[in-house]
Image 1 (tube, rainbow, N blue to C red):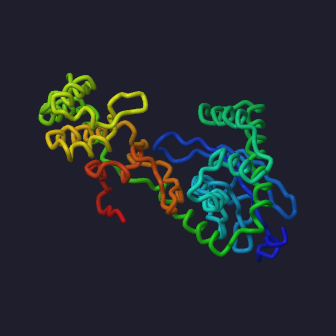
Image 2 (cartoon, rainbow, N blue to C red):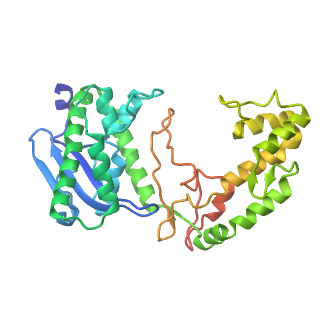
Image 3 (cartoon, helix red, strand yellow):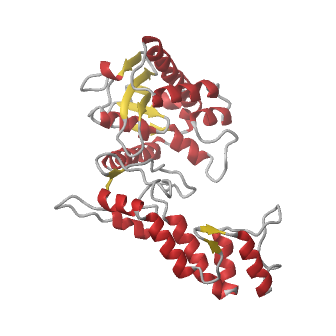
Length: 341
């Protein structure tokens, strides 16, 4: 670890946190485990044991290392702690190293350990502990200790991974990426203000909207009520002489993908209203938008999630990734303007 020792940091803190995060809500801290690399000093705290400051230094002489650091930074914000001055996210660095490729076990901590030949984690135990954390509010003393042990096992794996990755990292750029993650965590916590009354009205009136759209756009009679009938499409293709030209799935069924409808509607112009209708109906799913009790849309934005290192939030959960017309649901508080960058 000489290359890491040469960094001008007095301490290197490896940290993992656990929290509950109901859809649309701000995180609820559960516990924190941290390990200082040089001294071996360890910290294990249940959230209720933590104070107004982190239990370790986070100033300019300390490097904080995490895996998917937005989670840990969200924990800091939930505790109203000052943000670490220097952040290195091994998820971001691992993702960059494998850019354009898919590691055999994915991009999670266990996947990074597997890809780099580092002793990893018991995934069955990990899934069980996640379920315990997410689906309970009160824990027995034994469950608390088990959750802390689980969190500590992540820190141990993180340390092994850092010892493998650390010497080859370009910290000049890694710390710049860490600076961006502070902003992402703050943005995710703040959320996007949503007009709850309009959203609820649209959810209640969805069936009426669907029926209206179908009655206006289904000029070929491919729908039975609100259900698209593949058999009717096949009959239309046979009548129009396009059955052989229409793409099919590996099982021989006609493809119903939006790409197929878009492409074939250029050849069969009468299909254009139906192609547009299918897109509109798909975009009318409103229950997936994650909105908290305070009326704000919050979800993971997955920074550096694409091959071009852009954010990659879920297309149905995040209002700015959804269909453009849904952005009419955004309603800033009085005296505040909302402007997408």
